[in-house]
Length: 492
Length: 102
Ligand SMILES: [Zn+2]
Image 1: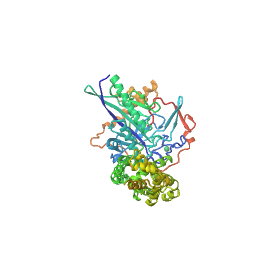
Image 2 (image 1 turned 90 degrees about the horizontal axis):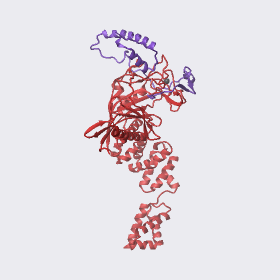
Image 3 (image 1 turned 30 degrees about the vertical axis):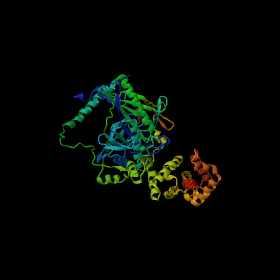
């Protein structure tokens, strides 16, 4: 048994985000997911001689907006570079990217952790580049290449190695997704490859009073948040075991690349030695630089709006919601905005939150949409919340009515009436039923009055009888009150 | 004067560009490239003290286009010059050591 070792996990991320522009970065080819192969290509993205790239302004502004949300310094002068790239999925033989003058650098992202604390992760740089096409390898000795994606605008974000656990890495990825979706700059669907995360993982191990650093491993092929967390966890254990077994530590050039095997839940070695990467960057002569003046900078900045974490904090402060509830509501911007409209229409915040997060999101998921698009006006949902608050309907009935409203945005009161879901809170009517039940169940009453062993059970039984006689429409709170009062009278 | 570019460097650049050169070609290109580099080195004679580095040689910046869709090529036209195809895909020799996926 080896001596007890304590170690620190060190993770940095390289992230690629697909920008939700209509067209590619340097040509007017349409960006579509799942279009027929090579149907969105032109001389520019095919790398044909004599063609010239022209920058997509929207893509540039999306990139700057994201960099602003990540608290980065925005460069007032930036240029493009060619990066040597010899694979057929980018037929120019180079990728247009940014090398020494990226459009932004030195920022940070704040991540709300599950324990309620905030973790700050540094952003080293964020720059624009073009994506490659897709290779499929099902042809034996040949590959099939589809260039529809070649030239799509990609935002590359490089973080500092500030994450110290697998769960922090996953939460960082989720927060970035929430931010880019709020900004509307990407659909950020991991399964569709809109966001690609490549963690760089290593360990600082303390053993016998010395610190050892394990070789950095980069993990690729992650297409879900779960895969991100699992793969980092796996890699931490693998590196620890390897160190304890072999004592192998970080050397120049022993960085390795692993691919995540989602089926077997393991990382698989892809490349042992870092190839002598020589990208031979040089300034792209076909594109002129970008200069950003104050007016343009301010114009983009004005589109930032309230970011998700700010909104989450405000929901806690302004509406008295728990941090958890606030995080669920603000996970999606449209849902958060819908919540606020319902509250503005006069509903209680906590009640609205429960209706939206419990019933609304279930319905939304079933319909593959968001709560705001269920076709229920904020006014009608506010009315439903008020009815529940006043005890006119039970929680179960509220959920039922909610569902009906999503089918026919009708007034919740009308639905309640039509479906016989209104609770009777009329004390007179309930009192009459209570009197009847008490008269019919003398034994149970006797048990309660004599404070017998089964007094509690007997009271529950009477309660149930009253509700049943009212056909489930008596407000349980009112029934309990009247019942207790009557029984006290009999006892005295 | 030919220390600026030697045969080894030409071999390396050829490898990076995935070019397979014969012995004869290596010899030929080493000589030619050395001559080119030597010629370019004339620029070193210029005094550049106090001259700001330039990122681009044109006094132009911010040439953008709007994010508007333009017609792409017909798939048949796109594939017309391809050495080989399979259905509507370009068909290329299998990619070994796949570090593709920019
Ligand atoms: Zn194109």
